Image (cartoon, rainbow, N blue to C red; front, side, top):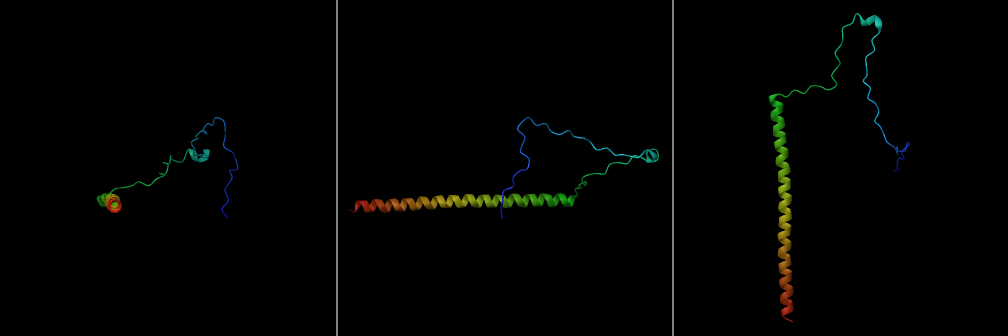
Length: 105
């Protein structure tokens, strides 16, 4: 079911040069070239417009993320500290029990 994919072409071992970048050009027939006006190229990405509402939403969302991540990190640090204190207390109790048992013999 799970089979490794073997590359069909091995990786090159010598010096590799990147391919040349060629800019695409528009081909306009000669009969229409004199009649048509130049056309502006279409934008590849939509323009993002920030309104006051979206800025407030972004700031609120960022603040919420920071608060949640901070609370998680503080709780993890508190859990580690409590575990360390508990282990230290257990070690003291066990050492005390071992020492008192050794003295009574």
